Amino acid sequence: MYDIIRDSSFGQILRFFSRNKMLPFSDELPGFELPSPTTEEKRIEGESEASTVSNFTQRSDESKLNLDEELARADNASIARTVSRPVHPVMTSDGVILIDWYTTDDPDHPMNYSTSKKIYVSFLLALYTFAVYIGSSIYTPGMGEVEEKFDVSPTAAALGMSLYVLACMQISLDHNLETTSDDTIDGIGPMLWSPLSEIPVVGKNPPYIWTFAIFVILTVPTALTDSFAGLLICRFLLGFFGSPCLATAGASFQDLWPLIKIPYLMVIWAGFATLGPAFGPVVGGFSVQLENWRWTQWEMLWLSGPVFLLMFFSLPETSAATILLQRARRLRKSLDKANLKSQSEIDQAHMTAKERAFDALIKPWEINALDPAVLFSTFYTSLLYGIFYSFFESTPEVFPKLYHFNLGESGLPYLSALVAILVIGPTYAAYWHYTVERPFAKKGFGTQEDRLVVGLVGSCMIPVGLFLYAWTARASVHWIAPTFGMGLSVGGTYLIIQSIFLYLPFTYPKYSASLFAANDLARSTLAAGAILFSRPLFLNLGVAGGVSLLGGLTIVCALLLYLLYRYGAILRAKSRFAVHDGEN
Image 1 (cartoon, rainbow, N blue to C red):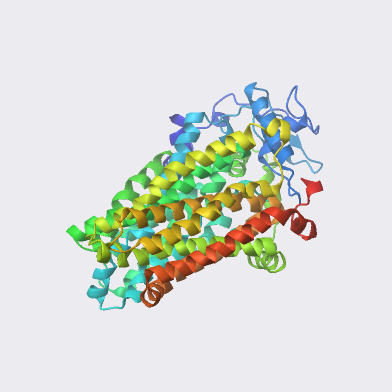
Image 2 (image 1 turned 60 degrees about the horizontal axis):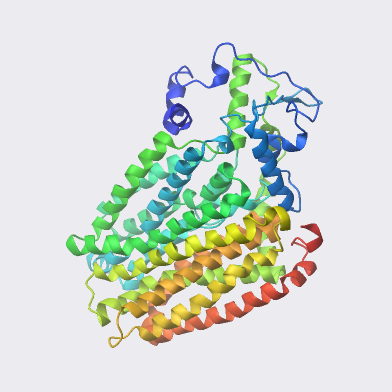
């Protein structure tokens, strides 16, 4: 409990105003001595360099990722931490002493947190994601009242949701599986917050806490505004300041857990991110029915406020580079030695804004243009996100009009997503455990195309679910049929996202962050656009025709995904960006 409070934003503020006298670190206590520096590569007593903790946490900027070696290195580091051994700081040729972990089981290292603490931090980030993501769709039940209140068209009213999605949407593995720290992730909100959180002097916690504080505050003027322009501005800013959870939470998981465990975390986190939009119409529908559209925004405050307080008082910094940088600053001050530095301080001195801008803005689109596998993955995931958000425009044409659901009941079919996640999430976790994690010691990771197997299953589920929804949405058929189709489609999308977002970083390790940048921007743009164009689509073609059109596109994508699975190795061999078979 002591370290949780000390490492939280509240603890850091308390330390600042007490001049570090309250909640001190171990190296600030009387009698602390820094281990003697060495110029030897073997810094851990009794262990080889390969097993050092810092070697595992600070990855090299290699152009190729050998996953087998990466996971083996994680295992070695885990073994090294079971026995506490001192880690001697290294003195470089220019006299700089690199500050590292004090021991192999250094309690300040996020990888050394207790399992219960790791689970708590991971759950808190998932809850944070849910609180932000529910805000995208909780607005939809009140759009009818927004039209009347501000005398605007349905399309204009839908901008309140569209702008929120455009500003904040990003759910992917992000930094989880990349090998370099120079690349950045883009979106509208993520364009700023993700690279900012990768700067060690900033870290992950400040973007989380202070942007979420603004998010919580903004819910108040959003609920009180009497101007339509003010409403749209507030909704956009809500999405913008809520986006760090979607841009950076995946990287926080990597700070805490070994690589082989990350897919389990993504199952849970992606589930929370999917259920947020699914629960929004349920919660918002009944409140609008009983009160008015403003209550949907008050409910965002009631949910996000307590989550913010939990984060403010108990969310620690998880970036190893940031923790070591702060440690170096403390030691420079207490020991009065200017040559004590962290590795990140040296690395940052050699990085330029021009290099970051090129990797973030130019490189991802270059790869999309020159590599068909990447272009397909960007289009497919963008299409699926657009279809997901099109449901918020098609269901008002189905359940209230055909089945006479009231406003509150009309949101209940979205709970089919909950059923889908509860069934598919554990199934996918079991698949990863029995086909990847357990056989890893004997068989290795396998080929990159093996990651697409679950995607093939999902690609079949999506068109089946869409056509079932399209052609059973009629008064003569029970409402459970289109609801089941919705759930099947969402479940298939869940599998596709898990599949492709494992395939990309292992196939294009050097450019993984740049690729997620382009993918995210494409997804957020198409999802925001789908909210606006899907209503005219369904009004002109009908729900059956409009959804069938989308279903037809997913059939084409399913065939292309199979071709990628079947001939992906050939494409990789010809690609100048991908890892070839002999390299992984």
